Length: 276
Image (cartoon, rainbow, N blue to C red; front, side):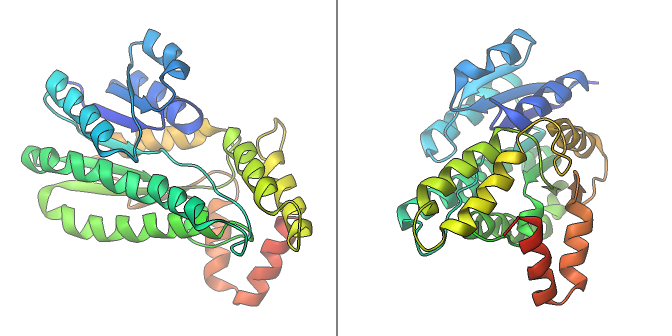
């Protein structure tokens, strides 16, 4: 049977890089795409095709999809993994930065999906895997625009699932908890730059410390990115994947608690968990 073709965005590091490797090991023909092509050299040597991609640029996105279709004639799996975390108090985050957060995490995901859907519809099959977060189901302080983007990914995915099932296309949400990667360090840097001084500095110090800790070896509240990558492979390989996979330390129980606890009690729990 011909290998299925998978495209992974944000493939230069973390979850995307490892997911590309594991999909290749599972027998998929894999394309990893990211802005930082030079960081995907090891993937290229392992037989994974690497492409330059800026998900916020229509031409860049169109070129990537066209290249894969020219070379393979099909795309069976799209893993929308590209994204970052913009942290800072809502009062202090410039709206230009808010726009950037939504451009990457929401509109970039939508752009890639729009480009592959006509081909998946013609195939009568396909799987869209959107990397959300437990932060798409509840919020933490100083992450308003990040959470807004992930809440949007959740809503988009739910609507897409209803629209696309008639064409044999599955839409899957993966909701990681804390994951040990450079994501936390980058988010902490954003936070300190935006709200490290001024009225929110105490909140920012506690939250930045938590974000930084999540990227360090031995931090007990963060899982390795391989946990998410294995789930991506599981969803991509399944005939009938689940609509949601809550994965990694804390994700499933925290999502459950957010549903059953009164809001103010859950707020206190979040404040304690983030050292605020």
